[in-house]
Length: 423
Ligand code: HAM
Image (cartoon, rainbow, N blue to C red; front, side, top):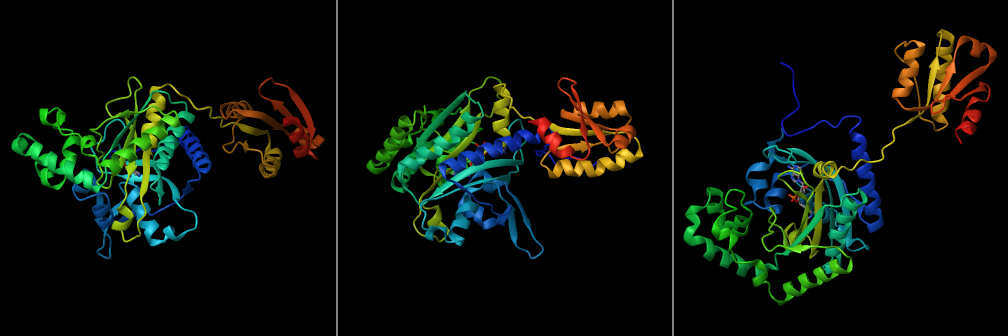
């Protein structure tokens, strides 16, 4: 039996990978502008990090983690998300003691969730995310949303919707939590088993249930926004003001709760509104997580961030018909004929590469015509033709592929002459 790729994963092949590299480069440039620095954390962490960080009652921890015992009987988990690892690293490396505060970080890398694969949902996917730790200024909430939007806009996406909500501070959340329990309790047996379990543990998550989303009680559930205390309301107002100042259109949706437990105050998602995008429209999700650093033994350092997946970003680009101007051309293909010329071309090829050109030659004994075909396929700007006669005469014929123009150059100063020709 042939072995196939695991379900929910994908190979990113040459021809596809260039788009990924392009997008990654764009995100890195944008992070540099916004002064977010890259952090790289391990692919696996102690399981407890996610149990405590993401939350015991979340779908991620309950049913989506790739957890295993290593040979030393430690429970480890392939990271399902990047925020908990970044917070762990922030505490462990005492980044809170650095002079530059807030600490603004970004990451790009694979995450793993055992979900039911479908369009836009993978078991291994690549997240680009940012985390700003150590500031409770609503301007940074707006900055983080602006950064995410800049990534999408810089790639040409237009059909986007920003949805925001406030989950309030712990006091507001507590009051809302009690109201939700009272609201759902009388009819909780009409809900799925997951929701019944959520009632006492995390009633907010009932609002996010995929099975019961059309239930009357979900539709008229008490809104968190009516439970925000003065401070939380003011904070939310300020975030909205700043978004307006940055000319970022948004909608407020009081039912936006997000699937991870660490959020408070600002929560947001960016959706694609492109036609034919598919059922899962969320491209990016994030929010504020004040208290998470303390929970992991650090000092008071409020945090906010987001993550988006490259897979959904690429799907949104496809839905909007966006093609990246990727040009993987080759500078020079050496067409060599005869044993001596072939030997000579080995050194010539290396000289071209050392001079900074992308260069290639034949390695599978192609005939002359097939070598030219190969050069065309590889979109060579020039071919350099070297036969026995040329070699004797100490020359090489360079052909500009665009117009067929041929120039005879001396082998003695080929690199200089070729450089000149390319100008
Ligand atoms: P999340 O909403 O679980 O949040 O995921 C963020 C984004 O990752 C989603 O909006 C989606 O683009 C992508 N994503 C999630 N699951 C999958 C999947 N199975 N396949 C493809 N893409 C997926 C977080 O992960 C938080 N750590 C975000 C955050 C950072 N909050 C604060 N800082």
